[in-house]
Image (tube, rainbow, N blue to C red):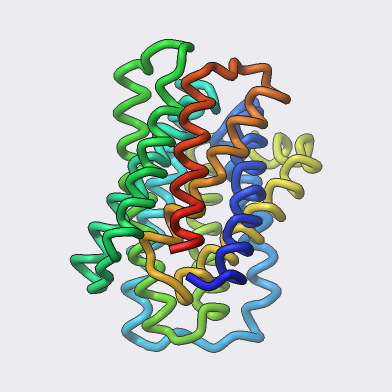
Length: 278
């Protein structure tokens, strides 16, 4: 992975962790995610006339990606309702890089070098260590939800990576995906929450606009990077956002910062450094 891609993905990871923290603080996580998707789908609609229409082979990929993204968001909302940010976020994301690497090997033919695989494994171990701190073992429900969220992240990462390359135009694929994915999730949230969704979003409009903007930027960078570098490496690097999430959780959400979190942060840093240098 070249230096510009590496630096941009790390910067996007900070934005990624920031919108996660904002959703975690939202009184209703599903509503918070719906607000973010209102912004992403709305902005993408304005850009839609300026991008090309996907050809026939891309539509099934978009449909599969929308299903996976919405499954991920529903699971994420449930996960954040069940556990604290510093534990639930790294637990979920710790599973995704290795799973994404395996899926990319099977479906995309991307075989990492031993050094890069070691870096990905180190990042995963660090993320899991961040989750298993002195706040206690996670509940079974948290573990199950984290596993589902992590696997869905791995699956949509591979599908999106394939879609970006199949389309050959990451901007068009990204815009269409955000329109379809965001619109589907907003409609689903509206059905589940009811008409109270809209006045609630209006009352939280500041949070909605900011989280939506952060989400759009971080997701656009992620899809761009999937077209520039192997899926497993990009997914692993994006999970440095867990380091930022841990700091946000400690500083702003008053969560503990235990020695276990510190050791996990060190492992993640070592893994990230190995991917950057090897």
